[in-house]
Amino acid sequence: MSDILRELLCVSEKAANIARACRQQEALFQLLIEEKKEEEKNKKFAVDFKTLADVLVQEVIKQNMENKVRKVTAKFPGLEKHIFGEESNEFTNDLGEKITLRLCSTEEETAELLSKVLNGNKVASEALARVVHQDVAFTDPTLDSTEISVPQDILGIWVDPIDSTYQYIKGSADIKSNQGIFPCGLQCVTILIGVYDIQTGVPLMGVINQPFVSRDPNTLRWKGQCYWGLSYMGTNMHSLQLTISRRSGSEIHAGNTGSEAAFSPSFSAVISTSEKETIKAALSRVCGDRIFGAAGAGYKSLCVVQGLVDIYIFSEDTTFKWDSCAAHAILRAMGGGIVDLKECLERNPETGLDLPQLVYHVENEGAAGVDRWANKGGLIAYRSRKQLETFLSLLVQNLASAETQT
Image (cartoon, rainbow, N blue to C red; front, top):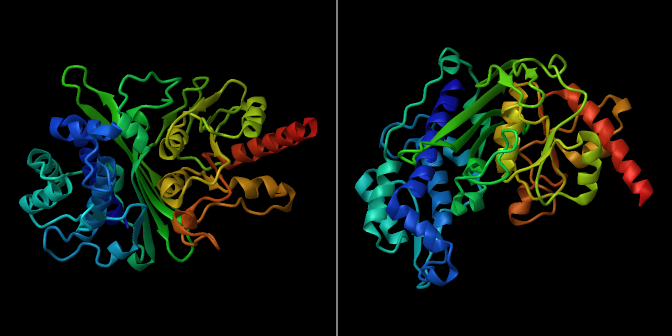
């Protein structure tokens, strides 16, 4: 299992390199600029470049795990069949020609295939193929010293190749943070890889790669950061051994269980700017002025992982399994989790029932398309169960108070 996690860390970094290359290399960046202007779009293909970036990252993750590119015995045979994401790797042009995007055996072959998708742009195709075929090494002393065995045939993987695509294409690099939290901009872009048990739906491993964390003022090149967590059969490990919470200067020891973690009696939360007014009103009574808006489901979950906020709450049904699985696994390793908001609000805490954790192996009954994998009841991400229970109690009270007043 730790071998799989190490490989996922490597492919997430390769994916981050692709994301950075598309923003930093002139030939690729010009394609992104063209796609932002409707009148300048290439009319030959039915897809735009941002979709190509998404698909390419997803295929890099899938095919590197299967290791087909190197034409050697697969490291994890059969695992590719259990890697799921939101993007199709098939492109269709106006002539009805179909192009299946894949990683080829050599850099030259991949460049040739990309050139067909990019309408003959040789410079851009070669630059992108170079990054795709570049070897990436990733080491972590904690993970390198650990060996955990788990049956490979029970594993499934959810991938969100570029979460917060709009922020990625917009490319804002000068956004100021609010107490360490970025409301928008490239810092909100994440690459999400979550591993779950296909029999129980429980998240087991998670990788969140943040490609755009800091930019060198001289070279204007970006550096990123990668976070991981592993929770399996009583073993809990993660890449953050101690997180300093920026609120009140208090410390939260991420390695503690939820019941042991120190927390403030008042809460902080990150939300979507499109959150319902009733939720915002109740939150304002629970959190005061410590409510932060931010872009990207992956980034908002990461804010909880980092200890920048206590809670990420979202009441709509427009996040999906690929948005939450990675962060859920990391939070489980830290003593937290991600639960179904609707079920939490309907739950009687006096019954002693377990919190309704999200699961990742079952489709929504009667749904079609991507809605089959939507988090239908909304979600709450948290680091401490004790903290969550208190938060939910206050939230329910204030929601009921708001309904009484209306």
